[in-house]
Structures are given as structure tokens and as C-alpha cells.
Image: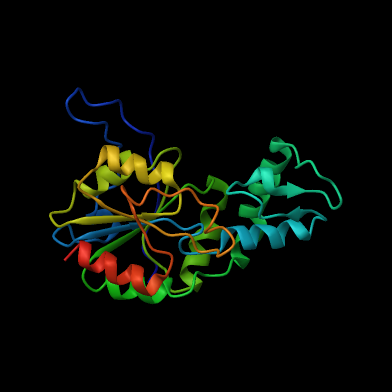
Length: 234
């Protein structure tokens, strides 16, 4: 049975110092999770799915090229034969359309479904993505088709406040997995007790992705990552 899909409400105002801000979050029980168990919070794009590859395939149907030249999105979109990337606003329109029409064709990251299935035997799993609202249903269907049918939360902006609000509701330890350094740093600032792991699914992007191994554990293989997460929440 499909777990609930919940849109994230807007963050609440900051709590007075010394506490860091927390976001309003759905109740863990409302997501079908047990607050007595550990919690695993995991991103989708370039973590559970090959987003850049799927986006590039979608752009090709529109006569455009996605060149993996930097760890960026809109600055990698080109018209064939041109040396200047597409205007950012035009790229954003294609990005929005991808979530409406093309994100269901994204390839799942190797080993991710099996790793999360094993982790779900001892922990609650929540999918936390910054996908736009119009891609909510397509994203939920994609997750279900690939054995990743866990509660789905849509977020905007840094993920630390919402990750902290979720972790606050469980009595066990929590772990967070993302490809983007700003999101990992946000969790470190807002919920420092949450274990953090960086994963980049696309081998072409791995040498380009900024990392901070002194702050966040970087593991780009899901078999090894699943074991490391399990150790962190044991």
C-alpha cells in the first residue's frame, strides 16, 4: 500500500536563541512511522535516481544538449553547436516541464532500493525532495514503481529545518542523505546530532561535486552507503 504523500508547510518563525530554527513538520505517526524507531531521511535526485541523465534525455527530445561540464543545472544546457549556455530562465522552464512530463523515465540509482528496503526493517524512511509542486504526483509514482514507496515530503530551500523537525520526533538516532553540500551543511547547523552522508549517483558528476569529507561522509556506492547508514543509527 502506498504510504502518505505530504506537502511540507511553510517554515515557522525562528525559535529564540540558543535554539536553532525548526520547521513545522508532519507528525511522524501521520506518516505511518513509529517514533520509537530510528529515522532515515533521504533525497531523490542524484541519490535515489539519475536526475541529470534523465533530464538530459528529456532535453534531447526538445533539440537541446545537456553537457556535464560543471556541477550545475541550467548552466549545462546548450543549443547544439553553441558555446554559451541557455538563458537560466529558459532552462528553468524546461526543468519545470521535466517534472511534469519526463521525470517518470528517470533511472533508479543502482542498489538504492535494496539498501533502503534493508534499512526500513529497523528504521523509518522518509523521502525529502526539493522537487517543484507540479512534479509531486509523478515523483510519487516513480518512487512506487521502483520499490521506493516511502512517505514523500516536498520541501523548498535548505533542508536542515525540516530534517531537524522530523528528527526531533523520534527517540532513536537519525541519518540524512543528500548530494548537495548546502543541504548537508544546513542539517549540520540545524540538527548536528543527525548523521550526514553525501551520495552522487552519476559517475560523470562525482569528480565535479563539491564535498566536505571533514564534515559529511561521502559514499557514492549504495551497498557501502547502506551499511554505513545502518551503523550510524544502530
